[in-house]
Structures are given as C-alpha cells and as structure tokens.
Length: 139
Image 1 (spheres, rainbow, N blue to C red):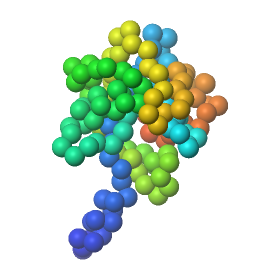
Image 2: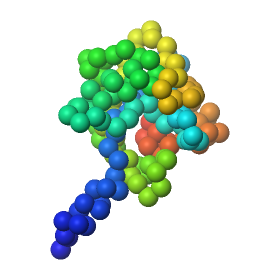
Image 3: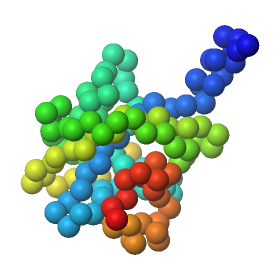
Image 4: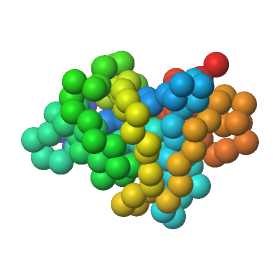
C-alpha cells in the first residue's frame, strides 16, 4: 500500500510544464537553450499559481522569445512525459501545444540565450532535451 509520504515523493519527482511546437515554413522545429544549460528544448515553462496550461504557454512565449499570442493561436497536442533535461532524476510532464506565430520572429529573451530552427538531422548534432527528441523533431 502506498502511503501519503510515498505519493508526495513520487509527485515531487515530476515537473509540470507547458511547451510549444513551433514549426517554420521549411518544417524546422524551434528549440531554445536556457542560460547555464547545454540542452535545447521547446520553448515554454512552469505554470504560475492559477494558470491554465494554455495561459502558461502564452506568458512563457512572450517572456522567453518575444512572441505575442493568445490562446486561440494554440492547438492542444496532448500531455507528454520524458526525462527532464536539466534536473537529473526528474520527469517533465508537458502539456504541449502547436503554436501558430504567424509572421512573428522569435528572439532570445529572459533566461533564453540561444534559439535554433532545426531539422532532425541538425538536431542530431545538438544536445536535445528528451521530450523534444522523443516526440517533436521533424522527420
């Protein structure tokens, strides 16, 4: 039987985030790298108290890459899990959305120091977070 303590411990080993799949006209996926890390991942982040997954993503995209979107620009793709790239021993649980950015151009901001548009082949030369590598790299 699982105790409350065991349940709390297993819950503490996961990190909840919202993440974006943003693909350009050439079919390349947008990946970002945060300061002090080596892994490239999808833009997004952790929710603030009371935020829905879509609200989290709209806020994070504005903060991290300067994209001004609303929830209508997001299409839910589902919930995905993978090993966390920057927190050993943790699993990231992501609410993932396809984001239509129109003609906007993302730029690194806040804790983002680099962004790249990548194909699967180009990604093989990068340290790509497990979530993006497992589910979202273009064919």
